[in-house]
Structure formats: structure tokens, C-alpha cells
Image (cartoon, rainbow, N blue to C red):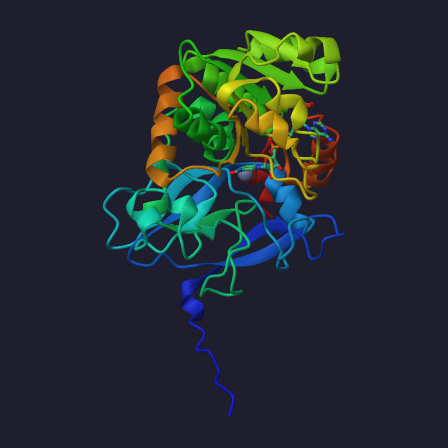
Length: 362
Ligand code: NAP
Ligand code: ZN
């Protein structure tokens, strides 16, 4: 016997989106379906969506496990167009955001502590995570609309004119804010940010606003002046050995955002005693093994960090609104996405591409 799934056509809405059908195919126009909002759901018309390097890793199956068609995008901002009966925190017309998660178990110790990103049964990512709705996994923000449980929707308090530039805060912003807070960046601390792309440039701005002495590490000589204008006190071109040597054993914290495999010893040796190199970049291929003596001789650590919880993401958005912090963006129409991916691979992003989702229409 076959069990046929009942399809409630009334509750399904087709929207324009952009995604891939295979790892080696470019992104192209698609029609996808969004559920009608349930009791606790918020329906959002997406105005802008930032382009994260994780979108590229996933679209090209660099981490494995990508399901197709794949619609990336987890730096979503837009306006509420409908809410379910049980929604109290949002109303039609509100300006809102959605980041990297759309659900979690709500019951484990991580969820209890507001650390949904570390949900023990696995948080539901905004794209490429299993869900009950067709097609059985989530599809992200390269689309006209998304429907999300209110518990995973954020308030955006930036002025309307900054909405597009606020989109990258939903991933790039929180991914740097959370480790900067956890490892207590602030006055009197020397903080390094490695790789000045989408994540890294937010790290420079956030660490500066927290009062730290901020040093940007880049492999791109051409970014030197920009990095100072973003708020760094100093810039080091990491290929330049003399510049690196001048900073030996001087950092309280270094956060590494690089999207490719590289030698970590050049950064661990710059840490003071008891200090930490935090990895947030997630390259396709592993880094060469770090030199263990560089760690044990000074009780140094290498740690990891992944985005931030929902409460901390709201705290970060409010901190950024208060301090006038947004991303430096280059707006693209949706059909510019494939060229944008190639430029991201060339480290040629100043400093985040943001899709104008109005270009998805028709
Ligand atoms: P991005 O905009 O492409 O920036 C990455 C930067 O790393 C580049 O601009 C470049 O900066 C440097 N870089 C890239 N390739 C390099 C190479 N081969 N050698 C040396 N430096 C290189 O990427 P992103 O969106 O910021 O994301 C960065 C990484 O973080 C990705 O792997 C992404 O998947 C991951 N990520 C992790 C989390 C998390 O929660 N942990 C969240 C979001 C993203 P310079 O030109 O300054 O050297
Ligand atoms: Zn991201």
C-alpha cells in the first residue's frame, strides 16, 4: 500500500527565488513554495538579503550534504505581511530580520540558556536543514518571501535608509559580536581580526565600538587604507614577515574569519600568555595542524565559535543601531549573484554583497 500525503493547496504559496540544481551549476531563477503562516508564524516580504561565504560553500556542496534545489541566504531583512493568531511580538508592517536559524528544539540545555545555535538536537538552519514542509528542507533568503516562527524573528531598529546595510548583521555581525563579547574584547585589550571580508570588516567595526585596540590582518595589500577607515588602529599584511614579527606575543584575542585553509601558527605565536585564537571561518579543506608547542609553551588556546543565540542577536542589532553600525555593502540585482560568488572567491568584496530582492519579481 502507498500512503499519499494530503496536499493542502490553499496553504501553499509560490514565490520567485534563485538557487542551484547541482554543485557545479550556476544559480538560476526558480519557483519555490512557502507555507501559509501557522499560529506562531511571521510572514516576511524580503527586501534585501546579504551574501555570505557560507552560501557559496553550501551551493557548491563544499561542506557535503547539500540538497537540491538549494536556495541560500541567511542575512534577511524585510517587512511583515501577515502573522498567525498566536503572534504577539510582531504586526503587519514591522521591519524585521532573520539570520542563520529558523527553529531549534526549545527543550535542551543549550536552548534553555539562549544558545539555540548549539541546540543538542541540531538547530534548523535557514537553508538546507530538514523540516516537515515540502520539499523536506529549508530554503533561504534569495527569495521574495519567507515564513518563520516568531521566536526566530528579530526587530530591526536601524533607520529605513540603512535597511540594506543592516542585512549583513544577521550573520556576519553576530558571528563576530558573540566571540568578541565571550572573550571580553574591550578597553585595554588588543584584538586582531584575520581576513577582512564580510565577517572580518564587521569584526573591525564591532571591536572598535567595544573600545578595544583593533588590528586588522589582511592578505590583500590593496585593502590597507580601507581597513583603517573601517576603524582599525593598525593593519598588518600577513604575508609581510617583519610586520608580523613586530607583534609577537602581544594579542589578547585574535578572531580568524578566513574562508580558506591556511597556517595557524603565524597567528598563535602573536598571542600573549593565556590568550585565544578563535576560529570562525569554515573552509572546505582543513588547516595544516598547528604547532602544539606554540600552544603549550604559553597556555594559549585555539577555540571555535558559531553565530550567536537569538537573544544575543537582538542585543547585537540594538548595539549596532545605537552605535550607527552597518555593513559596507555593494548592492546587486539577483542576476549578479554568480559574478558576486566569483569575486568573493577572489577576496574582492568591499565588504558584503547584498541582493536587492525586488529584482526577483517577474
Ligand atoms: P568573505 O567575505 O569571502 O571573506 C573572507 C576573507 O578571508 C577574504 O576577504 C580574505 O580577506 C580572506 N581570505 C579568503 N581566502 C583567502 C586565502 N586563500 N588566503 C588568505 N586569506 C583569504 O567570507 P565571509 O562571508 O566573511 O566568511 C568567511 C568564512 O566564515 C567562511 O568560511 C564562512 O563560511 C564562515 N562563516 C562562519 C560562521 C560561523 O558562525 N562560524 C558564520 C558565517 C560565515 P583578506 O583579503 O583581508 O585577506
Ligand atoms: Zn553566514
